[in-house]
Image (tube, rainbow over all chains, first blue to last red; front, side):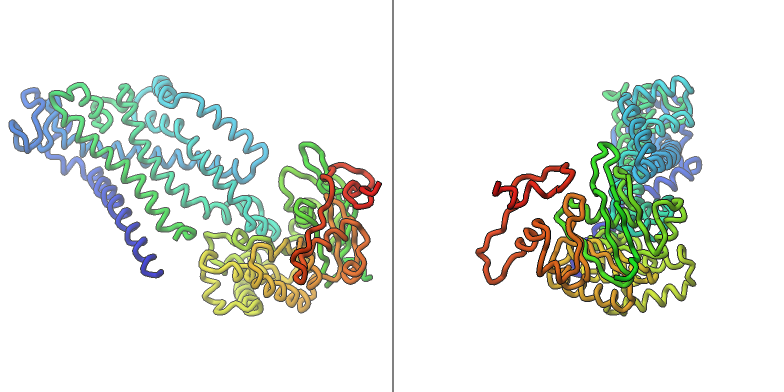
Length: 283
Length: 293
């Protein structure tokens, strides 16, 4: 029995290590990008356009992952792009989480009119096509990092709200809440001290998932040319550009795509891993 | 009979939406230091009475009439804040399901001591000592370790013991036990019953014991109220009830107790369906007498 338990713990450990390791490397890259990039990510060189990655014929030394159609170094752009990706992930993810989880807690625990208002609002909100919504929003408030982050928050807070509301509702019906109430705890105190610790694992898992999704939303917006200005390299922007020359230079699209995929996957796996590791109920 | 410690007068609780009453003019008295059993089938409103006293009714229902007197103070007319404080200081709840009655993400110790410290202004050391003393009293081995454990690390019977200890911790005058043995298996049930009865007698606490198990009632309670469809249809002393049940429903209830020496005996079915709204006598359409006619 004990041995079995040890085993599962170890497996969880590997998942946590792999995803956490990748995210740590990414954070280091983002912090150090200007110093470790082999080339200037913005420098164009039309004579060196569409150079293939290093192992293929025709590759030039120094351009490890090749160049795009304007001759910019793909590797440097990926490294530089991690800054905006992580910035979007952390800021948009956290803001989404705070807004959605707070409203969800209030709706799920207090119920009554607060729940009715919030839930109807979420229903109406979710009836809009999200990408169209974001496009409209960015069109109104203009492009740029801030508007991308606002767009992501505006699209995604409902997800948090729904899940956290359901979880808070379930917890609110447990007998321990009734006991706390009988003892004379205030409603707000019960929400913070009794309900919140039980909802935190879900919130954490959702939060990291949301960080991955924020990166994907940024990519989607890049596809419709509504991302951050074209100077600052973003993964989404690179993928969108790479699409136009996929037959001549697949590497422009594929490498940022792989990095994006691994990052989004790591975020979600990291959250699930944390939840499994630290949720006392599952442990 | 002594002056009642808990006295409910004509309590009516209704659904907010349809105004349909769930408790119909319920009255009951519980003397200080006594045990009152509250029996009835599922949905009769047993738990609802406990919840009404403790002020934890679900949001969908409301008290539409009646009085609840606790220690010569009327609860329902008190301002909400004062009522909560008064209830918190003088009552406690032993809940039905020990699996959900302890917060799964917090250690046991603080869950017992916190309310003593935060709400009743005990000193931290005193609360800790009290918790250990009570865990000893409910026969929990190695209480120090248990205090540092999470609820999922402990068996159901142990958790119910902890909840009992927790209920008695603040020396409440009234404890409401809401089917405290239903979720446990039979062998553990018996120990828990003994424990509750023992602690009740030692601390001279008034106990409102909600259950659907007449066998349990006969062991623990001095008085008994039978609830049917939100109405008290019989209130008597325990011995009288078993010897001479007055209401036909009580008789049917007693007849429904399985007999060990005659396993083949079939249950006495209660005829007809429940008719929700009968002003005069709500059980009337289901009695044997009505069928003779």
